Each structure stands twice: as C-alpha cells, then as structure tokens.
Length: 443
Image 1 (cartoon, rainbow, N blue to C red):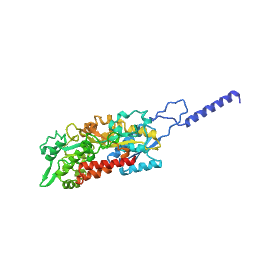
Image 2 (cartoon, rainbow, N blue to C red):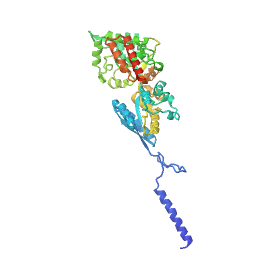
Image 3 (tube, helix red, strand yellow):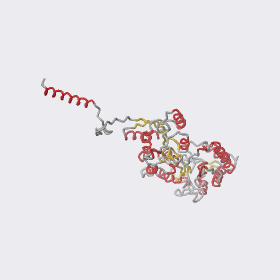
C-alpha cells in the first residue's frame, strides 16, 4: 500500500474514534435542560445532597403548607433535596437529643426560642457565625426574636415564627350590654367594668361570663409581664425580679376576679369548656377572651356567624403598656449534622420572604421575617393585621441557663394564691427564694 493511502486511512480511523467517544459521553446540561457552556477545565458533576428536616407539623392544616414550601425549595435548584420527617410534638425534642448523642442527627430541625442558649451551652446546636459572615440576614428579623437566638453574642438558630395574644370580644354581646363595639376596654379598670356589664345570670347561675383573665391563652406569667411594665421574672444579668410591686399588685388583681365570681363558678364553667363549637368564646359562654392571632381560623370554621372585634391586651393603667407575651419556633442545625452547608441554604429559604409570606397567608401565623409579616396581602385580614401590630408590645424571653425548669418552682406558689393558702406577696417571695436556690445549685 502506498504511504499516502496508508496515512489517509489511519487519519480516517482516528477521526471515527473521536466521534464515537464523543457520542458515548453524557452531555452536561443546566437545570433548564439546555447544554451547559464548556468551562475549559476538568470539572466534575456535583452529587445531589439529601438533607433531613424534622418538624412536628403533622396536622391536616400545617403539614401540606410546610411540605409545599419544601417542594418549592427542591424545585428551585438542582443541588439539594429536602426530606421532611414528621415527629409528634412530645417526641421530637427527646429524639433530637438522642440523635445528637448517637452522632446521627437531623440536618435541620424546628425548635423553641426559650432554650436556644441552653442547647448552645451544651453543644447541641451549630454556631451560625461562619454563615452569617457571608449572608448578613439579621436585619430581616424582628429584634425581639433575634436576641432570643443568641448565646454569648453568637447566633445558633434563625427565627421562623412567633405569636402574640389579643383580646377577642363579641360585638353582639357588647351591644346587648349597652357597650360600644368600637370602643374595647383599654385599661384593667375598664376591663372590669365591661366584664360586669357583660355577665349574664339566670338566678345564681352564670349563663355568660363577661371575662375571666385566666381563661384562654394568657396565664399568670403573662399577666405578671403585662402588669409589670413588660418585665419578666429576670432582669439585667439574670437578676431576679419576682416580688416587685407591679407583680404583687397583678397577682392580687387576678385573685380578685376569682373572688368576685366564686371559685366554684370558675371551676364548674371551665370543666364544660371544649374545642370547636364547644369553645367558650365561640359558644357564647364568654364575651371577651384572650387568644393568639391564629385563633381566628377556629372562629372562621366553627363560629362563622360570630361578629368579633380584636384589641390589644388592656394595660394596668393608662401609659403602663399593653404588654403581651409571645413564643414561637426557630430553625436550627443540630450539632453533628452531616450536611451543614446545605442545611444553611435551606434555612435561608425557610426564613426568606417568599416562604415566610406563604406560611403567613396559609396559617395566619405571625412570621419572623419583617417584610413577609407586613406584606399587604396577608394584612388584608383584620385580625392578622392586628396581631402584626401587636408584636411591637410583645415580649419573648430566653430562660437563663442557671434556671432551667424554673416554672415548675413558681406554679405551686401561684396556685396556692388561688387556693387561699398564700398571699400574693408570700407566693412571689417564696417563688423567688426557690428559684434563687436552683440558680445557686447550678453554678
């Protein structure tokens, strides 16, 4: 064979081999399906990461909402897949601690505000400082919530949602009692006056009670905050603030409501309270009632014909403040999570405007992202709008590290007041003494 002929055939074989290899090589494509531009280097395809997200949202209402948010995140990018794991409210905390100890925790978990610092001190959650240095998102959250995710000035969680309490009142009952539905009570004195006018009796039996401060979702602890200028049990540097004049007078005032109605009446009526159509406010047994903003969803379902108004919690006296108490939940990366970087990306999405707005619209739940909370679409609902405005007067407190479980020491003393076994002053002094001993023991 001639040299030129041989050279031609060899070149043709080499070209065929190149084309064959190119045909057998998978083409790199973008998330939209179009071929990606060549990078010019030896770039390997990143493996998709699956992260495990634990929540206790398993109800017919909330589970579809959180799973839609997860689905939207999964569809928004092609690098991370979030798997939702539902655990009952009573189990999720213990299983979280057990999984951390075993070295196999969730990647992301919903947890509470009160003990973010406690978990951080025990190395149970992840310091987010490294991520926050690159993504400065602190200012998107309400300051009252942000301070509750800090431990030693470092964030160990991101705020997700919160709540606040409002005074719901029955406008029809107001008109029946000769009260103006446009003028809800503003002070404790007015609250007492309105309540007595709204009471409805048949002989010695109450058919309707105008108001009782410890029915609903505003307990003794919350009233003590309301009556003491928005201050909780602990002041600066965890100084105890139990038997203050404001708290003593508040506990005396709470006891006076039981004295007026009679303890037997209070206990008997409460025993008949239920949920849904048996709810005391929805059923008309109570004319004014304190509950969270999300309570409105129950009214819309079970009390559609109920004409309601909402107002801030009345203040002790004019100028003392319409203080409410709040709580809610945060998003954390448990210590030892296998995919913290991917977890962080999902946390940013969960607490971003779009996901937070969707949660707010579907749940009428107060969210931690300010822009989402104040979105005009969500605020078309009057009750939701009132709850957002009420966040300015809502206090959320961390539990001091040295006083974990302190409420178990307070409750027996406050219960003793309503049983007539201790005076308000004795109860608060005794509670402070017990908590002081707890804190000294933990040092």
